[in-house]
Length: 141
Image (cartoon, rainbow, N blue to C red):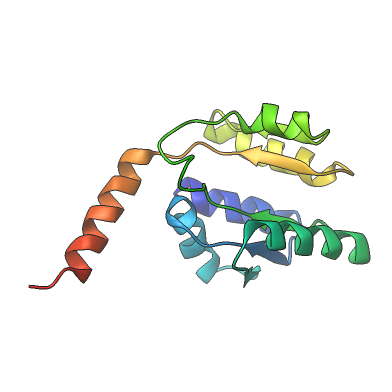
């Protein structure tokens, strides 16, 4: 099972119904995992809009509002500290270091009654393979 599939299963186990998000290279595996999921992905064109919609959904329903984002072009191939970033805005931040930590961290994050950022590592070598494959598929022969 891929980490993205485990991530989606954990969200399903916590009764998440919707994810508001921006598709991107860093979260393409999550997009794939959502195909077989009961969770509906609401695609948004800007991360700020996705965060706003997730926030409003949570406030209006009392359920977890989940926002999925991708890295900006300036952050690509760097490892920003999203936990410190979250804390600088008085939010909570969690970092997933190992696969076994994913479910308990998501459970804790979804139980928090505040804005939470869950930072999951990205294997950039996998992204480069995908980029190369997409280039091969779209390049003229």
